[in-house]
Length: 281
Image 1 (cartoon, rainbow, N blue to C red):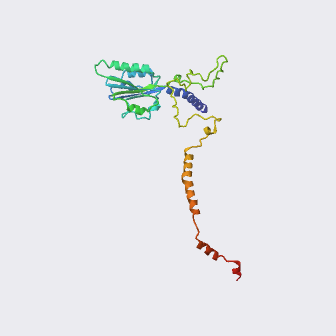
Image 2 (image 1 turned 45 degrees about the horizontal axis):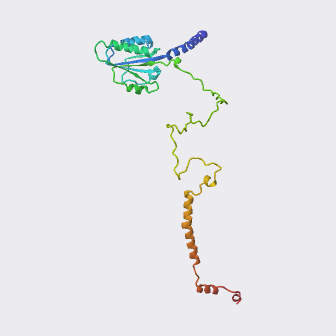
Image 3 (image 1 turned 180 degrees about the vertical axis):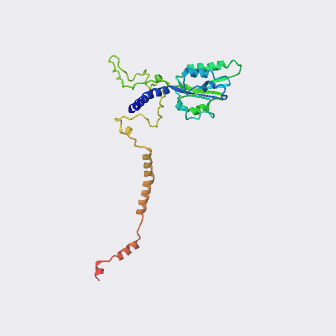
């Protein structure tokens, strides 16, 4: 009994990767229609169809429609649209998994449907809208034009379309040849961004007299060129010192010196001094 259980589990594990891979290369097929009379081609189908069966079913949708809109998205999968509310009404036909759909064959099947319905003399229109796979599918579906027959499908992303790029490896730069020396100041070098003769390169305006220049001052320049002594704050401080502070100080000292003590005040001061003889008395 245990051996049978082990064999069954091993068989299930062996079948699982194949089934997963089979559902990986599939895409859904949704059909909305104002009339359900011509959707009988999908009624007896299973949830998994081959591409040829899907093309045959599309070409047999019937002619009870005026505006046909096809929404096509490359890389679409059933898991992308299963949780979205794409239309106000549920789809008339829905095949979750269609194997190996390709865009040229899909266009041929839809053109065949349009051509077969053009013989009755009824005016019809067909629109093909590409929905990017990185956009909001629900928003894109709401922006579709008015229709009475809508087909939503796409093609799966095949692993063969995926391109793998190697990591960039640093390549050794070629050493300059002694016969062909490199001139770093060649004016005809197309990679020189500061070519003055190139009209497309914006030229820096020359500074006007009195404006500071962005050119760095060499270290061996004179002191007055390397350091700025007479700046605006220093000049303002000198003006305040010589025009306000020094005159105010001069007036204060002059006023203090001009004060005179009256002679009577000096006599009063002498009478208050107690001498030694008077103290002994």
